[in-house]
Image (cartoon, rainbow, N blue to C red; front, top):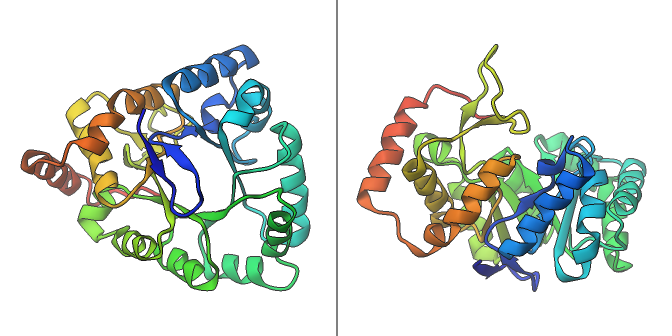
Amino acid sequence: MLYHPLGKTGINASAVVFGGIINMDESQEQANRFVAQAIDAGVNYFDVAPTYGNAEERLGPALAPYRKDVYLACKTEERSAKGAREKLEASLRKLRTDHFDVYQLHALTTDADLDQAFGPGGAMEVIEKAKAQGIIRNIGFSAHNEDVALRALSMYGFDTVLFPLNWALGINRGWGDRISQEVGKRGIGLLGMKTLVRRMWREGEEHVYPKSWCQPLWGNEALSLAAMKYAVAKGAQTLVPPGNIEHFTFMLDHVDRAFTEPMTDAEWEMLRHEAQEAQNEMIF
């Protein structure tokens, strides 16, 4: 397993993140096996959120034997201080930990999200206080809106950014270029998500991977590897797979090549061709 400094956090993060949603709706025994597989592969960065069903309840016991040796990230979609405090306390309890190595404002989408979170009685009051108390070690955010993400960076010295670095969006619309450049200039930790995604599920389409919000790439190893290389080329220091064990395992098997082999002309051409096929498809 390769490891990379996550910005200025002091975290040397595994090149693949274990997304806690993998454990959602699994038995505790299966969740334990998935986490043990990740640990055996060298994964040391785990990420989860209260919005992932019962993932926190499953991840907490599974991760308990390894907690002191790994980094644990969590999130909150709450924008008020009251809501953020309740969710923070609940997440600490469910995950059986006394601190989070990274805690993130989750799914920043609108300017209103930022205005409320940073305003009087907003979530940042609780998050900053928890950091001062050592309950939170680093503060980050996730976003699916590049303008909002850039505004967030202008408002606060965040330690990490979890952002979609998707090949189709990037090639078709330049999506992710500005945030990649900005976090690079600031030395902020960049975690790439939506890397192995082609498009949104279509109406009426069978969700073959129901834990993935979008339709993941599957069955084309060359395309999937090129998609991972794309996110690395944009500056991702670690990659977050779709929320199922198959894609997590694929990333484990191919991440060394993604980070060490440069993108070839043939791979760029393949991505451009596939992006053109998907140019009228939404991803989120």
